[in-house]
Length: 438
Image (cartoon, rainbow, N blue to C red; front, side, top):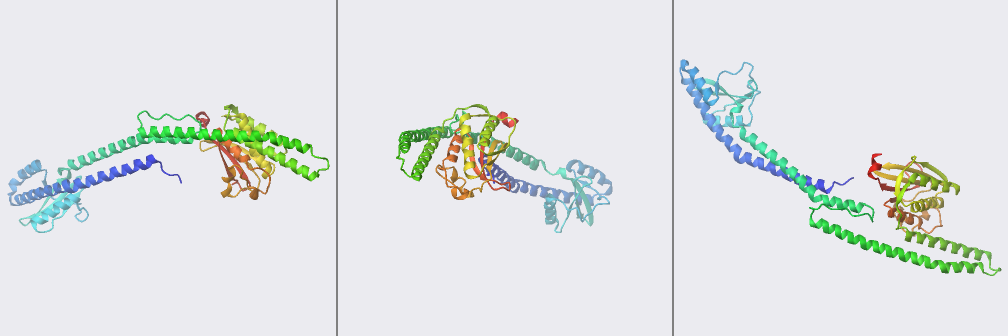
């Protein structure tokens, strides 16, 4: 499961807080301003309706038309029977109608219903008893002071949107240097450090400087260790050569088994020293442009001549930037591990996956327990108990990983998942921009 980014978490939290605050502000304004205004408006309108209905009921028939004109012109209230298709049971009014009905009930002493009709559009109807008559009165909903709520909602909506935009801009500006630092940590160890925005916070610049100092010290430690390992391995070559010469000068009556055992031990010591020298020199790389497919074909031909079976799925060509000799040594170490532990057959595949180039070498051996996969990449670590082999120094894959990391390549081990037993050595690297577009 992919974890949400810090930008998403921070922006989301601030956005939810802003929205909650705006909702609280809107509710507060409704309860403290709009609702009291609605009550006051309902009181005034109820008094006007009752007074108009009583005046209309007492007025002579000849004077009623003029009164209706004046009532419509000055107060936007009409008196007249409702439409014939008006349903008094299914047209209860909205909230303001209920407030008005409650006020009319308080004044008249009995329930008075307020209805809403949609023809004419959004018209409120009320029937008021006056002097033994039922006076039907209606007025348009737009007569109510609806501009204040709409204006308030518009102001709150625009301010919320503006705050959200400013929050996103501010969070992105603050976290952009952090994304640059994260990218620097993902890059090759000795890659140039990125440039932080000039207007970034001082803490991020201090963090980048501290990272650079730490990287310099670690690189110096690695160089010193490599130099020490190379020096010791090189110095041991001379006494080893003298031991081999002494073995050749052993008396003829020396038992053959003893002579052969000593020669085999000397050979293995020589191989171990050679591998130690390879580890010490693996951190340096001579980078140049090359064709990775051509290099793999050369490696495959050598593997086939040595009796192996090379099964490859490769493109016609693959431009790559790296150290030719170091890559050749990397592939040879991987294939030597295949020959030593898993027979003579290897499947090689080069592909693109998730924005990265992936080169895999898969054998047909017994595989490795999952908990030992990472351990096998450590120096002098061997999986003999799982792979059924007792030879080797445990440096082959460690050398391979060091060579790979020196050129920005990630090496990992995994068991095959295609229904066949075996181990896969997977090399992956970040694709360049031009390679991603192909």
